[in-house]
Image 1: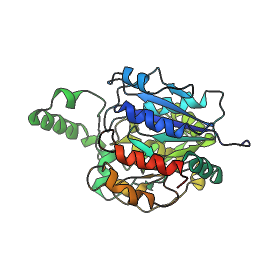
Image 2: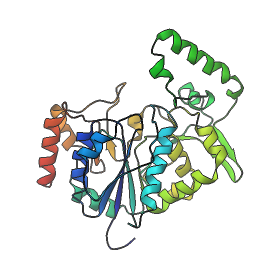
Image 3: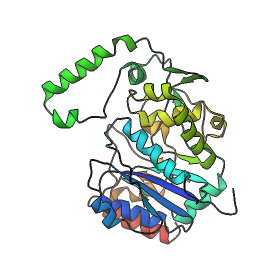
Image 4: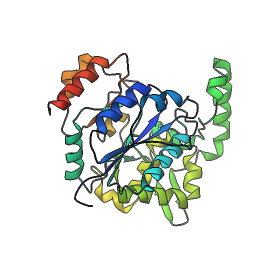
Length: 315
């Protein structure tokens, strides 16, 4: 690493271009940061191009249709990493954001945090391969496929029941799968954690190389449930970078709130949208929580104003 920290923010987007612009404005106050944005191919990109400006904002030209729970989210994330890594900027840190995320610290605080943890991989996870909890087993024993328009084109209950029934029938031969992906160079037990993470340059490039050279891994992961919560986690926690993870060898635990990396979110059943009433609580979060998920334009405006003011005041 050089004398300063170069940060690439990778943002997967599909809605609320005003919020994306506001987050970019805050984070790119750091002169050594850039933002790479993937806009869901099902979404009109024009409002994003109109809202988000600056020479350090880079929109991906290659766009994928990203569906909730689908493998295309992984492919879009790999495109973001690839775009940043192939630039001549020499990034030290790659930080994955997801559209409705927002910083709760100043850019100076975030920059200093990554300088002080220059070798740490912020990607927590637990091993779920061989689990005896159906909550985890179902993620890899059932052949999931969310990368299509079925749920958009068949909103009726009967159609969905039929679709899910066929999915379970097709999965019968797969029910003995133990969650360990067997590749030509070794075995890779599945891990599970939060979709948001922050990786060092060396680790991010390792992920790209691994993704390119492991076709069986990709084939299996394509049908895992919510693969953006397993794909990168499994690669890193089966790699030499595992020893640099902020936390490792964690016991199996359900629900995303157990796997916060640098984001604070609440998940009582769905991800909570934070508003002004949450400001005091958010200001009291631990020092290693840099972002929140989630906020929305129109619902969270006053909270965002307060967070921006706190950042300006160095709180």
